[in-house]
Image 1 (tube, rainbow, N blue to C red):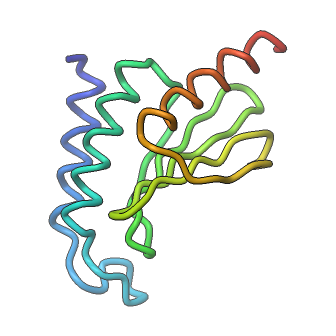
Image 2 (cartoon, rainbow, N blue to C red):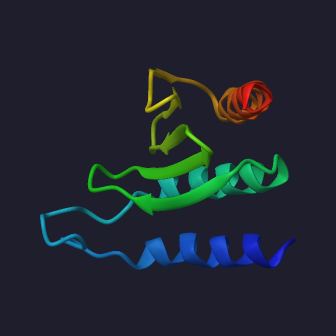
Length: 117
């Protein structure tokens, strides 16, 4: 795997160390299932070569992966019980999807929209 993947994986693993109130606003530690889903998502994101800009834990217990290409923006929210995809120019559309559907949709979105640039 690439050095970038290894760096991202190390960062994701560091989220396991988050304790109660990690954001100083009462956030709970991330659920083990969320971290497992996020690891699978990270693997697929790197394999698909999606334009990952940033990822971070959320106070809601989710992990948000953010993608960008010029003025396009998309996000994948990974939670213990579901995934949500947000795509468009500033998040025009939000819906739930499986991990395979999510990655496929993000790949298709960026390929299609990149042609318009």
